[in-house]
Length: 412
Image (tube, rainbow, N blue to C red; front, top):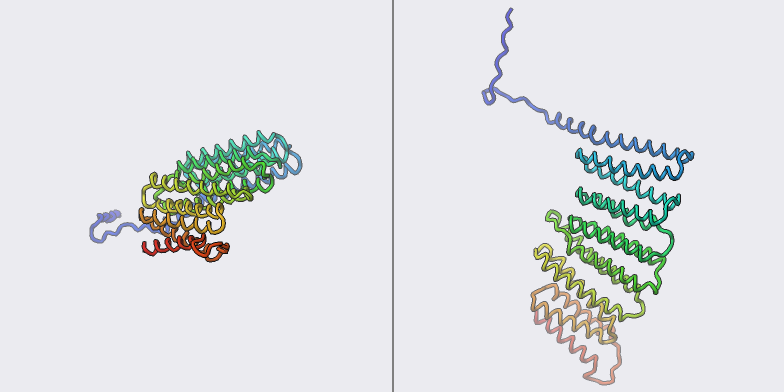
């Protein structure tokens, strides 16, 4: 019996044609299976292998199967192998996992070098220091070439941990702070090349930790000149960070916040360090405060020239505020008695005049703040006795306050 041919398939678009249905749940299941197979099982397997190797090495170390030199050698080889192995995953598109392996490899290198110096005393401090610097420099270059901020973060953490890992309990201020300055400059260069201004925060925190750790143990007045040079250098590097940082339109708001807070913290930390070192001679602090004010005025002008876009104007205003703040701080450091009020009132008049000429509302508000400080000083702390009933110093100071107040009222 002949077999009847099957009816021909209807063309697409013909009446009654219905295209084959592709179930979305099938695609989702396929994608989930691929993710589990390619990502999670792969990672679990690698972690399991590394865990097994670590337990084997631990058992071998405890039973003295491997001596100190062998232990350090295994750690160094493992670190290098992890760095090379991570490149294979990055080439296949697994960037995040590649960076995780790099972090593990960098950690193995740092810890192996630390053990070689501090635990087993196999190498001198200079050799360990140079090797750690080389590891940090390699990490920075990899971060720049691979456009990986995560790697730059690992390099920065390892770089600042190096002096702590290799501490010998002796005072080496020049070597320590020169190294920190080079590390800060390296971070500044990265911030100039990549929109990674957040790294400057980490560098600032690491620098402050090392400065405080050294100061609490070793600082004496005889080291003041050298220490002032270094803390001034650190402050200059972080002051230039927001100015030279590469802009990123996608994260402009976040970079603006980072730059503003960094400017305030940097100025505050620098002046606090100076106050701690110059407890007695207040004249020196006066000149430092005036120098900081002039510096931030110059930075505000540089921001206006290099970054005329309106979105960066807030940083310029932050720098102007810092300049006025340190100018205000300089007044009570240099002057005494009613002259403090006079200084603030003169500052208020100058700020109000500049605000009226330039149309800058911020300067007007800062001028009003200086006026309020001067009036508060007059009312609350003016207790000097004057030999003349009228036209004395207090009378003239009040007259100046009234004149400035009238200027504010007229401007409004």
